[in-house]
Length: 428
Image 1 (spheres, rainbow, N blue to C red):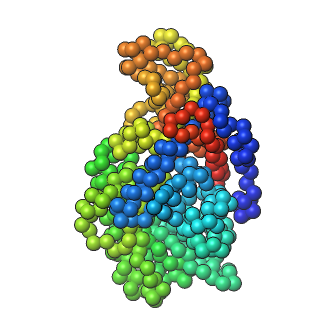
Image 2: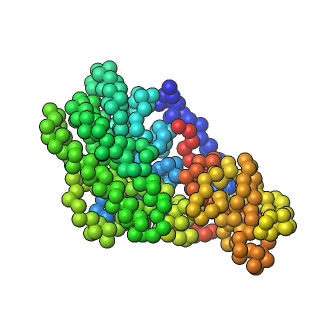
Image 3: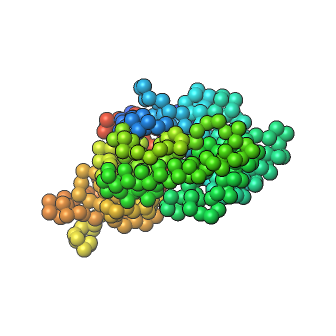
């Protein structure tokens, strides 16, 4: 089992070395493939989500899984009059690096949710994490969706000299069939009874993720998915309240349930207008969560809730060969960005990425190279690519693209000069 020390000492590239090497350097001088993030757009996207949460009357819990950086986390949580303090992490490495970066010590992060249903092999390390963040008044929360998770949390706490209660979200499956338990399941009520009777657990709220909302193609579509999310967790809370009241631990539960909903599309639909349309009596307080939104990608663009101007990331690649007339639709070109640099995720718009400013698309890939093919605009306008030319490719899924790159080159205001280097947290 990887220990807290291993996470704390995990080797990361040194920011000062990379800053000295790359800040002030033109993008044209970088080795490709290279991931570039426009900090101005990234920050604007973060402000938009903070405003959405405030307008929707909810708190915001930002997912860190897309960028996995200290710099990006600060932009997600703090901007002018807006402040949020809750995050979701996908890995223990992310959680520990939040601590290592001083984000808990300085009060930026006060609430860390480990975003997978808790596994037996993670409990000891999460307990160490809780001990560490508690020194600065922060909390670690877990997610549960199976009775065995109750049992091994209870067994762990019984082994401690001073047993504690873990704060948990119950993960709800609203039909997405990823993680969670459906409220219609015959196991749901017994599961809630076991949770409320447990001496090792306090139910903080109910959590759902509308991964199916990526199928949205309009604001009204996303609003419908958002409404379904709210109804799912609100129904769970309605079922839970009488069970809690009958529990011997009812007096220990003093705060309203938190109803946590969101994905980037539904979070974009969380506006004052959609809140006004929410006529349901809520059995808790609303929390909005999302993760992809600071960077965005072609999948998000296809929902129509963001435009090209909201996409903060792109991958620089170099054209290394050219094949006149080879393709069914004309010429083809070879670039040095393959599936490791771009991921193999596709999307409804087709292809693996679009070339910015040129009517070409990344349509086939191998491990370290990709095939660029012309779109109709290139064929009609005779737009070709040249060997040695650097192209900027916006990919389908920013989260997986970012995961491949050891560091990110930061620009501002569509600039062509590196102004900073961010180093993402790698590993699990």
